[in-house]
Image 1 (tube, rainbow, N blue to C red):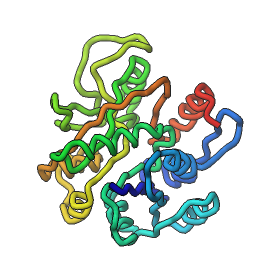
Image 2: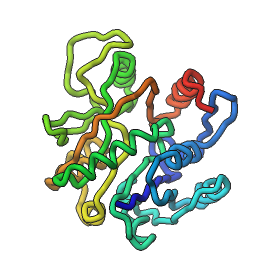
Image 3: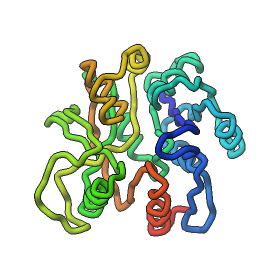
Image 4: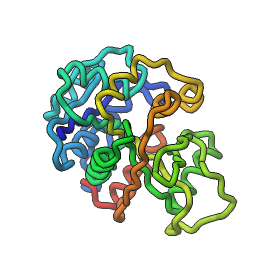
Length: 266
């Protein structure tokens, strides 16, 4: 099955304008833009046929082409990354069996997250979309709780059936737990990793659906699939000692840079 990775990147963002071009300093002291670090994560993935950056902004196009990425220009009317991926897929003429959306705010995404995701979608004939989930340790869960107390949008959490089909995604911490956890302790909360793999039919249908109330309330694009009765597979991935965090707010930059320093990420 042929695989396309699309990295949707838009300049305008209500929480963080210009986010794809935000600089992140690695362990060696070298700064690279968020979109470059996301692209470098994508090209490390095995058995991928093509990687493109999809944007509507000439500044992002120039930056991406400057570090060697292939760029597909898309319209400014795309409501979210999934719609941008759908348009990029159409602009490329289709021809891929699986389309992966590696959102440009997840530069710490390990290659095996995406490899496991693609394998999970291939093996589940019922699923039309797949997305990774990572069991939170106490450190990650406490970070989520701290963000919510401070009024910041932190990570997204997920709950799912015993067959790993999604029940719900939320920017709140779900499920509720009254326990406290040490940094290294496993918790019952799963962090949703902002990567998606789609079958082309589901991706093509998505832009034709209107956003539903849950998507509007949570601001989570994957809920549109669920609100239209489509199966979303949650693929549990392993950290293997790697830390993971998404860049949602300017305050996340030092947090991610500290993680890169600790992991030795250049």
